[in-house]
Length: 256
Image (cartoon, rainbow, N blue to C red; front, side, top):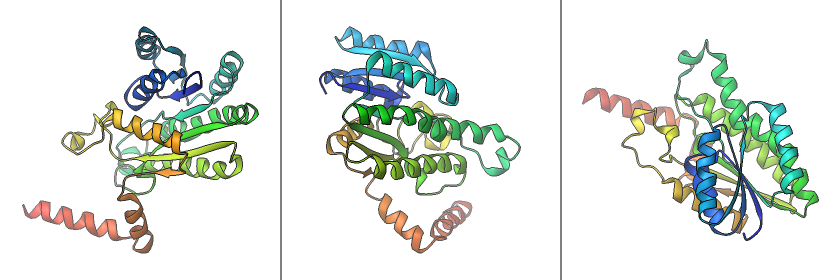
C-alpha cells in the first residue's frame, strides 16, 4: 500500500478509524471522511504522530451536492484513489409502528447508507478508471440479506446499496474491482443504543478492518460470516422459516 491513496468514509470511529490506522501503517496516504471534524482530526493526528500521511474531510453524505463537490475537490488535490472503503453507515432500531409518522428516519438512513455512497462513487469510480484502476470495498451488513424485525429501514438501505455496488461491479471490471463485505454484529458505538446487544457476541472493529484489508488484497466479490449463505438459501426456499423460528423463541420466553 506504500504511497497509494486510500479514501475511507465513516473514518472518525469504529471500523473506519481502524481501517485508517491499518492502511496508514502500511504506508498508504489516507483521506478520512466523516461528519465530525473534531473526531476526524483526532484520528488523522494519531496517524501523523506515527509518521503517516492523513487528510480529513468533513462531509455529510446526506448532502449529495456537497458530496459531489467534495469528491471532485479530493481528486483535484490528491489525484484518483487506488482504494475506496465505503464504510459510513447509520442505524436506527425501530419497528414500522414507531417510524410510521417519522418519514425523516427512512430518509436519513437511505441518505447515509445508499444515496450518499452512490453520489460519492459516481465521481470517484470514473476517476479511478482513468487513473488505471483500483479497488472498492463496500462495507455492508448481514441485515441486507437476512430480514429482522425492527431493522426494516436499515436492512433495506443496506440492501439497496448492495444491489447498486453488485451491478456496477460488472460494469467496471476488471479495471476497478468491488468487494461487498457483509458484516455480522460489530462492537461499535452504532449498536450501543440497543440494550439487547450489550451481551451479544460481536466482532471487534479491528477484526472487521482486517477482513476489509483481506478483501482489497484478494479482490473477492463478496465476504460474509460462514452462516450467511445457508440462511439466505433457506429463506429463499422457505420464506417463513424466520417467522416460525422467532415465534418459537417468543413462545419459549413467555413460558419461562
